Amino acid sequence: MKPIKQFFRMIKINRVLTYYQIDKMVLTETKYSWLIWLNLIFPWNWRKKSVAGRGEQIRLALEELGPIFIKLGQALSTRKDLLPHDISIELVKLQDDCPPFDEVHSKQLIEEGLKQTVEEAFAEFDPIPMASASIAQVHAATLHTGTKVIVKVVRPDIKPIIEQDVAIMFGLAKLFEAAVQIAKRLHPVEVVAEFEKTILDELDMMREAANATQLRRNFEDSDLLYVPEIYWSHTSQSVMTMERIYGIRISETEKLIEAGIDLTDLSAKGVVIFFTQVFKHNFFHADMHPGNIFVLPDGRYAAIDFGIMGTLAPDDQRYLAENFLAFFNRDYLRVSELHIESEWVPKGTRVNEFESAIRSVCEPIWDRPLKDISFGLVLMRLFQTARRFGMEVQPQLVLLQKTLLNIEGLGRQLDDELDLWDTAKPFLEDWMQERVGPKGLVKNIKANLPFWIEQAPELPGLLHASLNKLAHIDIHQQSDQIARLEKQIEAQTTAQRNRTIGVLIILFALLPGLVNQEWINESWLQVVLVVFGAYFIIKK
Image 1 (cartoon, rainbow, N blue to C red):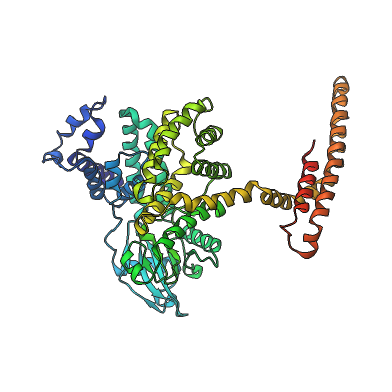
Image 2 (cartoon, helix red, strand yellow):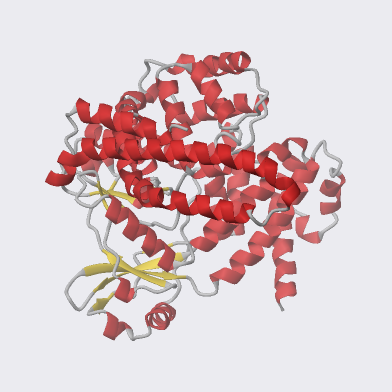
């Protein structure tokens, strides 16, 4: 039965793509152009074709193909660096609204997930959903404690549909990559693979609940962002119960003004929240579109929908921060060097040529308010420039780019005079100072000091093991081995002595803090002693 369903699904996809002339967009002037004429043989394609614009045709086709294709279009809409402007503008309009499934089915799924009846789990339960999307729908409820909550339940039988459509997407991506020369640098197969991982992760409510819990912990007692509480006793792999929040959607600017919310302050807070998540916590909400963001009466942001979260590798995090700072300081030479050091562009790239190309993109945007520029457009031009020098798409930065573009959209909507650069620069400077300045050095030494002290007594044992191993080596090799070992013993003895001196110096410097259980940041003598001790520890 499954192959039959897939066959009819492929017929529908073919009919829709042909009607909106997407086959012509992709296959014209390629070696597969004959497929355009082959399509005309099929009876389901014997009708007039759509005459809408290119971007609108793609959007309408995705909407007609259903929720999974809509989700793919939404994911692609954030890749302004990859798509022509007319297409990306249309994809932004895609709405993930789906008809709700019936009340009986919904209650049945919740009871199966929670292993108890709805009446046992909740004091009140509204069977009419508050919202319904492609992956799940949401109901209002009240716990027996009186706490107002929302209950998110995964759609029934959604996984087989996803698997079927994603398999077809892979086939189309491979055809696209084979037929269109420029497609290779767009990595369509990798894009579909990343989309598959993301959408399957969204099916797991336990994962989403864990994401929400971590984000809530990160912003505990924060005056910037509020994250609703998760009720684990009422959560399973297919059902999630979360505290209900009461706020104004961030897109409803008139209501925000009526509530006395300062939109300028709110837009600046959004930028700070983004950089705090990315650089301080290294755990960021990667789906910050207006439908997922509310504003509480006290002016704090409130986030929902935690299915898509992002992290960065430490090296990418540091390189990214340095890139931003160099960019804000108009140090295009440093931007070029960082791209090469991080291997975002090939090692052999000529720095001066790359610097000149970056300057031509970035220099025109300075000293202009956000309303007059588009960071998305700047990103797109930067990546287009970098690709001329051999830059590949960086999968680890895709979610970050998407989130930054969402932040820009929110900022533009709330305050079109917001200067994104002036808001972000002080935060990044402080972060870099914490990471690589004196504070960062002292923090790293304090973190590693117990390990160094613990490892120091093991050095004699390591020497004994080496000597014991040497005793069993062939006699003809021993003379050379003994000479090398003598040098190693001398070097290790010197290193051990240096480490002991270094540890003693650091202990002396930290003694006031260890006694008083606090660190006296103002004492430069302590910093000098710690640096001096660290020098002895790492000295060979």
